[in-house]
Image (tube, rainbow, N blue to C red; front, side, top):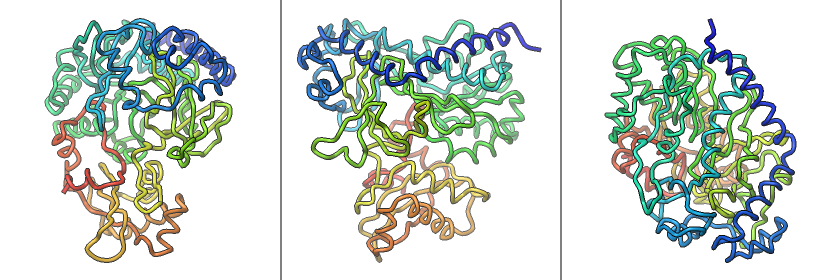
Length: 494
């Protein structure tokens, strides 16, 4: 029996579907409109004055005046905003700073404005509504739903609220979902991640959970604790749980493990949220990739990843991208980020409409020998090698071994297994063959005897969790890099 809430969800979903179709069917015009609005709005800001926004009429003008920047390069402007100055990167002051972990600069403070905040909420809502429109399934809206997220406790800095993105967004859950939402505010405010997950287990066990969402690695921890406590599969504990919503990492390496923990298959929706903006969400269950949000106050540029470190790489807009090319994604937004390198690489899986997958991080790759192996390639290799086997992988990361005690250098795969594979060398061979097929540079280095085939090193149970705990990044939105160009991470795993 459908409730009124479930009945109303379907016409609402249809209306949102039609609205999304309007802009997704006119992508170039949509992006041009966003571009013009951004430049016009920010002309009188300090950044706009410094970069002669008043003279910018075209993308070519923009490229000439506004160089690509990462956080370090934009930091002098951000520091002025954090200090309380107005009209620096965007008009007025931001509503929030999303605090994220930086690599070289310590904490990053990413502004969220009154214009940019709605897209963080609406995109997540629309992802669920598009699922309802496609499948006709709305019954789950009557059950309980959970998002494993950071603390909603915010601090104030010079009149601006400061916190983790997931904690900020928690304050914007629609009223009609408040009664369905878990965990409680008290539990959500627990700082220690392991204590928090234990409390979430106690809160959710007696409930009718229908939606569970979060970064796969941390949801896995929650599922394992549920199973330890009850001795049951998650799907037997929550019989109406049929929708898993995730973001942050590729789900495929976790899928077999999740299905084993749940005891059955469930539908899933992939999201692409970041402090800098909500960029994409999965709009079709049987289509690869996520629908790029072209109508959310974000103007996108793309640079081919293999040209990114050239002196003057070409910056293209949405109308010029090609399917299957690895691009660094550059954004300008109504949060006051301009030609900003978020660090992600994406590939387009479709251009009608524009759908992307996240292929990795521009700083997370292995090219110690010129091979430029990226995250998408290692994840696909692991997926192909373990398909149709009983091998279950909890987590893995890859690093170069440049100075082995004997023989040629190689890629070393550090893998935490759920079970113990009988033949590690056979698994390594399968992974290596897949990598050679995907990456011609790697193939040439193996055939040319510059590298020997990869080797697998087993990581003890909970090794990755213990590593994240040791560096103060257990839980929340933190995740293990899939691969690195050095051995800083793996040296701490031993």
